[in-house]
Image (cartoon, rainbow, N blue to C red; front, side, top):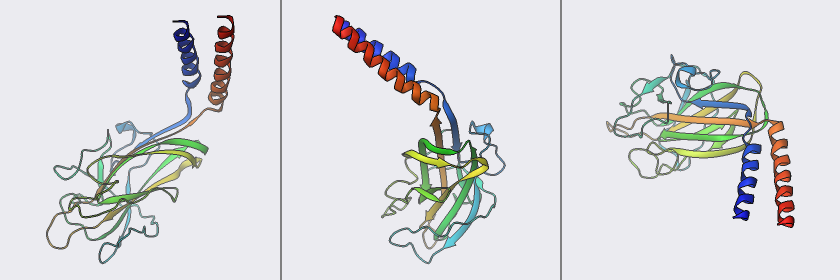
Length: 241
């Protein structure tokens, strides 16, 4: 019983030490032109997804290779899936390059979407990205790859492996560096669309949510102090027991 109480006290100190606020927390998600981030519960500085451009190829390559990044700002559109795709993640929405991207047969190629956001900036950010795409997608942060393309394989609806259109690919991130300044950070999604020749429908789109956060320096110091203090208390009580 005594050991249980000691362990409980240790756990309480650790929890208290680790429960302090993050210095900067950014919550993002996909949404189309004409919608605001705040209305969906995302960080208000995030801009709507914009369609940056399309790079064609004659047929799907054996291994996806992202084309040079583009900087277009064409409008995007909310896509409402029915049978092919899983539902959007949380309050995000599936986004496409045209209002018919879900019902049409897009040509072979890479479709690039960008969104920008503001951060306090600096190193040490961590977080997660949840991603779905058809057929698959690569994700870059300020031009640095975070998530590679999935393998297309033989699935007639979307990629065989994450990221794809049937399940959320959740990726843990750490050691990220964000830039300071208004809209200084760019998340880029390059959707690889294999398509089908003829009239077979193979829709194209992307959906994501993301959270980036960095601990307050004081919280890290307090966590270390709490660990040392808890260990000392435990050892003192053990000696006098």
